[in-house]
Length: 285
Image (cartoon, rainbow, N blue to C red; front, top):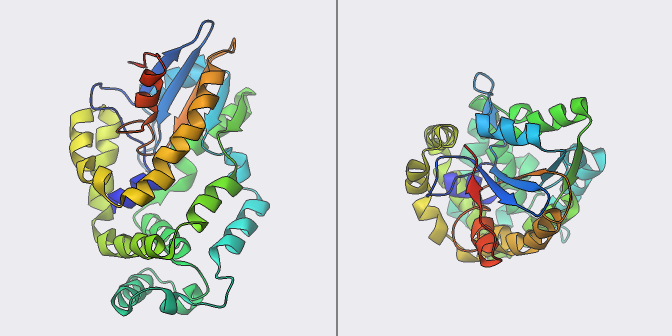
C-alpha cells in the first residue's frame, strides 16, 4: 500500500543525501523551509521531529498543499461527495473487473463498510475511503498528523496559514483520472492493504530518525509504478508549486512549506526543481 499512500500525500519523505526531514532555501532576506509531512500518526506516537519544530518556530507563515481549515469545511466535504459520485448512473461493480470487485467486497466487509454503500462512488473515492478506514482501525489519528498539529499551533500563535492549491483543485486531480487509472488505483489499494501497518511503521520510523537511505530503499519501487498517475499527482503539481515557492523567497519573512510524499525527491521533485533554478537546498539539522 505504501506506493498509494505516498502518491496521494499521506506520508512525507526525505532526500537520500541528508539526515533531516526539512530543507532550507535562502532568499535575499528570508528562509523558506521545505518539509515532508506525515498526515497520520498513531495516538501514542505524535511528537514531531525537532527539525520541524525549529522550522516552525522560525517561520511566520505555514504553507500547506491545501489550507487545513479549507479541508475541514462543510463545503469541502460536500465537494468530495459530489466529485466522488458517478454522474452517469454507473456503479462501482460496473466500473472495475469482477476479480477486483470481489477483493473490494472482501476488504470493505473486513473494515465494516457495507459494499452497497460504495456502489455510487467512483473507484478513486472508494480507494480513499478504504484507506482511511484501514488507518483508523490501525490506530492512526488524522487529528495528530503534521499539518493538523501545526495548524493548531499556528492558530494559537497567531500565525498565518495558506495553501499551494485549493481543495477543489486537489479533488479535481483525482476526479479527472482516467477510468483505467482509477481502476488501477483501487486494485493496488486493496491488493496491498494487509501490509499497511508494517510498511507504514517502517516509513514513519525512517522519517523520524532521518534515515534517508532506509526510506529511499523502502520507496525505490514506487518511482516506476504507474507513471501516468505519478505525473498527474506529483510532478505536474510540483511544477505548478515551484513558482509560488520562488515568490516566497522574495519576501522579508520566513515560511514553512509542508508537502506530502514524493513531492520533495526524485525526478521532478521540488528539491530537483529548486536546484535547476539555481537554488541550494540545505538540510536543517
